[in-house]
Amino acid sequence: MIHSRTYRSVNVQKVEISSILAGRDGQAAVVGVDVGKEKLYLVIRWSDGRTERPVVVSQPEELGLAIEFIQAVAANRDLRVAMEPSGTYGDVFRYACHKAALPVERVSPVASNRHAEVYDGVPSQHDGKDAGVIAELCGIGKSAPWPWHDASEQDQLLASHAALIVNHQEQVNAWRGRLEGKLARHWPEVLSLLALDSMTLLELLIHYQSPAKLAEDGQAQELLMKWGRSTLKAEKIQAVLESAKKTSGIPVGVGEAYHIKEIAGQLAGKQAAIGRASS
Picture 1 (tube, rainbow, N blue to C red):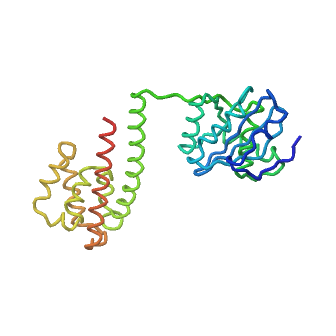
Picture 2: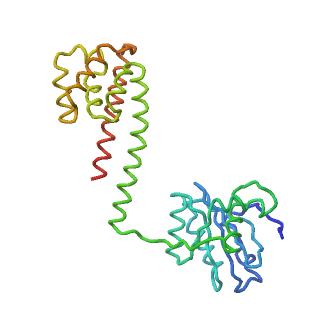
């Protein structure tokens, strides 16, 4: 049965806790929490399925008041706090619940989306309703314990390195795409000879910026051998030099030369950063 729902929220500082708890002595409850970037919405669901109006909390300013409110509701009753995984925005609140010994349970966002229409007969979602949906799913057993675990120093370091690698890789992909666009315009032949992440390619672009300047340099072969070390065969070096001389690409102007050098430098730097974070 769908009960009438009240979504008009009240600020946590204006909540009359005594009126909320009147006649509810010892009755189990769930506090559903919808986490936003700047606000939390809390909805109490009692074991009989009835819900209270949403309580809105500004975070982080009123986070302590939110915990005090939940602790007051939890006194002398079985109470669980339910929330969805919401990235870093919910971490501080979840940690505060951990410190206050308030049990937290996790509700799947997919389940919340599916349950939105069942909850009140309307498929739309909004902050006060979302908190109520989360509370109801927990109340009917559609949640799982989500205790806070302090990671070891080793695990923290590993997680930090992994996050850095992901961040650098995202930037590598972006710079690689820009470089591919430039070469497709100015030196398309080299794309089939050297990989976009080849340090030889990046070194020669930082040094020369254009195939024309590479083709004009009588010392280019020696530099390519130096950059390529033992991995770049003589045949490949000759092919790169020939492609620079005969390219069908559009000549590189001063502005484009500066841009190509910057892109190659950024890509080389990000790849080096991934290497450092991986070691």
